Structure formats: C-alpha cells, structure tokens
Amino acid sequence: MLEEFRNEPLTNFADEHNRRQMEDAIAAVHAALGQEYDLIIGGRRIRTADKIRSLNPSNIDEVVGYVSKADTELANQAIQAAAEAYKTWSRMSPFARARVMLKAAAIMRRRRLELAAWEAFEEGKTWAEADGDVAEAIDYLEYYPRLMMDMANRRDLTRIPGEDNEAMYIPLGVGIIIPPWNFPLAILTGMTSAAVVAGNTVVLKPASASPVVGAKFMEVMEEAGLPPGVINFLPGSGGAIGDYLVSHPMTRFIAFTGSKEVGLHINTLAAQTQPGQIWIKRVVAEMGGKDAIVVDETADLDAAAAGIVTSAFGFQGQKCSACSRVIATAPIYDELLKRVVERTKALRIGPATDYATQVGPVVDQAAYDKIFSYIEIGKKEGRLVAGGGKAPGNGYYIEPTIFADVPVEARIAQEEIFGPVLAFMKAQDFRDAIRLANSTEYGLTGSVYSRNREHLETARVEFHVGNLYFNRKCTGALVGVHPFGGFNMSGTDSKAGGPDYLLLFTQMKVVSEAL
Ligand code: NAP
Ligand code: MG
Image (tube, rainbow, N blue to C red; front, side):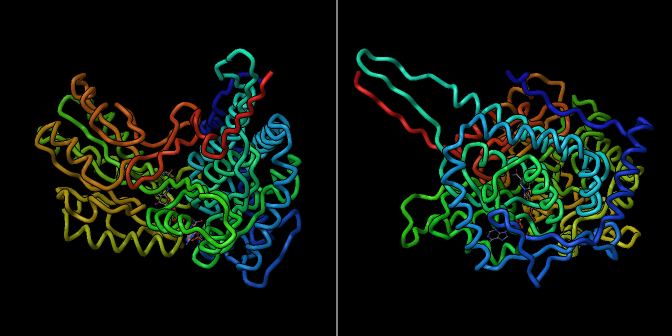
C-alpha cells in the first residue's frame, strides 16, 4: 500500500546547510558544462553532426551542452521504436509501470539540487524557481502512478443478472510529447510520465532551449529501469521535425504545451488524416495566457502589491500563468501602482546561479528581441513607470518593466509577451474590472484581491479562467492541489496534475460476458 500523495516540500535556502549544498551542486554542474548529449532511440544512443548549442542565458559565453539534433529520418526511426516497444509496454501491468515512475521519483529526489542547478544554468531560473520546478516534476512522478493504480482498480459498472462486465482503461498507442522550455523538467516529466504510466510509448521532443535538462530526465528514467523504446529522446528543431512527427500516420496522440501559434498549427495538422492512418488523433494542447490580477478598493494593497510583483516578475515573467495585466478599480489605482513600482524597483537582477538574485535573464536572444519589441510598442500604448531598458551583465538581462494607463485594446493588453512586462489598467468599478479581465482571447489564470464577499462570489462565476485565485498570487499551481489548464485560446483545459488527466491518455474498453 502506498501512502497518500503529498506535495514535495520546497527547499528552504535561508537554511545555511541547504544553501551550501546548493552552492556545491552549482559548482559541480559548472564543472560539467559543455558536454555532448545524444538522441536515444529504442535505447540506442545516436550522435549527429548537427547540434543544438545550449547557452547559459546568464553568461552567454558559457555553453551548457551540445545536443544532437534529429532530422525527419531519425524522427521516423523514433516512431518505429516506440511502436515496437508498445507491443510489450502496453501489456505490462499498470502496477509495474507505476513502480518505474515511483523509482524515478526517488532518483530525482536524490538528485534534486543537481537538477535545479542544471536549470539555473540552462534556463536562467533562480534557485527558488528551479527548486520549485524539480519539486513539481517529482510530484507528477508520485501523483500519476497513484491515479493509474486507482484506475486499474476501479469497479464502477452497474451489475445486471446473468452477465459479467468489466471496464478497462487501455492506452492509445504511440504519442508525441512536445513540452516548452519554461518548466523544463516539470512539464516535460508531467506530460511524459502521464502518457507512459498509462501504457503508451512516446517520442519526446524537448524544447530547443532546454535540451540538456531533457537529457537529464532521460538519465533518471534509464536508471529507474524503463525499458528501451518506451521514451525515445528526440531533440531537434520544432520547425524542422515537428510537422513530420505530428502528421505521421502511426502517431496516435500529441501532448503539447507551448504557444498558441504552435498549438493551433499542431491541432490543424493532426486533424488531417494520412494514408494508412486508422484513428482520429487526439490532441492535448495547453497554450498561452494573458493573465490578470484584479484589485478592488477593499483589498489589502500591500498583499496585492507583493502578489503582483511575484506573479509578474518571478522567472522574468516567463510563465504561462504570469501576471501580465493589473486591473485596479479607480479609488486605489494610483496607490497600488505606486506600491508595485516601489517593490519592482527593489528587485535584484543578476545571474540565476547567484543566491541573492530575484530576477535572472530571459531565456535566449529570440525572447530578448521579442520582449524589447513589445517594450517599444508599450511606449506608444502606455506610460512607462518602471524599467524599460537593458540590465547589466553578459546575458539576456531586461529590467522588470511596468506601463501604466494601458487601454484595453492595446497590444500589450491583448498579446502574450512572455517576459517581465506588466500593463496597469484602470477600471470604473468591480464589474468593469471583470469585464476588462475577460477581454482577451485567453483564459488561463487570474487573481482577485478583495475583502468584499459579493465581489469574490461574482468573480467566482464571471471571471472566465481555468485557474482562479483569491487574495493570493496567480502563479505556483501545485500538483493535486490546483489541477492546471486554461480556457479559450489558453488550450484544451487538460488540467495537468488533476484527477482526470490520465483519461486523456487512455481509452475505455468494456468486456461483457454472458454467464
Ligand atoms: P513554443 O515556441 O510554442 O514551443 C513549444 C514546443 O513546440 C517546443 O518544443 C518547440 O520546439 C515545439 N514546436 C515548434 N514548432 C513546432 C511545430 N511546427 N510542430 C511541433 N512542435 C513545434 O513555446 P515555448 O516558447 O517553448 O514556450 C512558451 C509558451 O508556452 C508560452 O506561450 C506559454 O504561455 C506556453 N506555456 C503554456 C503552459 C500551459 O500549461 N498552458 C505552460 C507553460 C508554457 P523548438 O523549441 O525546437 O522550437
Ligand atoms: Mg519558442
């Protein structure tokens, strides 16, 4: 019997012992930078001439690793290897599959700070953010096996005389797992482990900005005893091999997390039946956000300001759940803005590997350029009240930036920037605030800071987002506690880390025997 699921506690770095251990982990990973990582297809390691050079965004002279890059021929081999492994893995007991995941959780727990250090180097995650990401990955490896075991034990059919009926949740087939780089271990582990524990086999194409962390995940799964071919590791450019993987006739499902543009493209492509294809492909697509925090005149303004700054600038605003809009009612608008600007200006910017850093660099040159282009747009659409410029350092450092008095139709109030840029908007009253909050095509997360019970109850019904929070930040969803996923253009609302998630990776077979 397994004990009940519990979230992995976060590491307290204020404790000097933990701090030293993290410093040691950072030193060890620093010494291990610049190595080569291979593709893994059917358990075989394959090295290609063409490689992804993964840079440290905090110091772009440092190469975190050189990662082999697949082409479509290797992508085909990976799908064939997954199909071969499916023959045995899909027939294995769900309990045996679950045990591999639980073993992987134990290995990750032992390597916890080392994995966090890799994230600090490869993605520019601060200590706390990196630690949280590894903890979330461990949570998925503990949560989904328990769900699978529950599903295997479920007996909820109605009995009728003279018949024996059984329902089984069986896997779908070969899946393509396409995670983003921003939760490089957590989301990758979550989507992959859910698919695999349910009995599917997969091709895992990590994001090109986080392939080394993906390779570390593969080390963990191999050590846990996962059979070859169950997860095929296929780094490569999404633009070059993504369409091939998605449209392959042997692909049964695609689990994607990333931008709206790519998610919609995958959905369209997956809907086109290929010669030889004998199923409708299933698409799980979790996409972007334009998340708002609403603050009314009854709110605790200090708590609201603290929640806004953490939600907007934690991991440099590069979270799907990040707050990118503040909607404040008129009576407290100026005061709230002042407090948020004060806190923002006090944030310490620096290399993610430094303990003291609160805001690190953004992930790469493309993100850096895109964010600055939005800052230029913002200067025409709103009033710049904080940041707006480069921050010093040999990396992709951007000052946390705030624009005030942004109108609802502004591009910086409608489009996902995915960086440390926040738009402040003024509402006439609470109703107006909810109207503004619902004014984008997205619907992922949102918060309301208020002490007015009627306002909270109105928001509970009318604020149309998949994850709504009251009097707390809008980031930091916990596995099992806050099943996560958004509405509208934020995706298919798959609710990762929730009790129904595995249904997306299974189909129910019912066998009825006359007695
Ligand atoms: P992205 O640019 O859409 O990339 C996501 C993944 O798709 C990457 O692995 C990428 O590969 C791949 N890809 C690109 N083109 C493809 C194609 N034609 N076919 C198949 N795959 C393709 O997103 P990102 O920049 O990594 O991540 C940021 C986005 O993710 C934001 O929009 C954020 O809101 C969203 N996100 C959503 C959630 C959620 O739960 N809703 C969570 C986290 C992030 P390459 O890296 O090789 O291009
Ligand atoms: Mg991208």
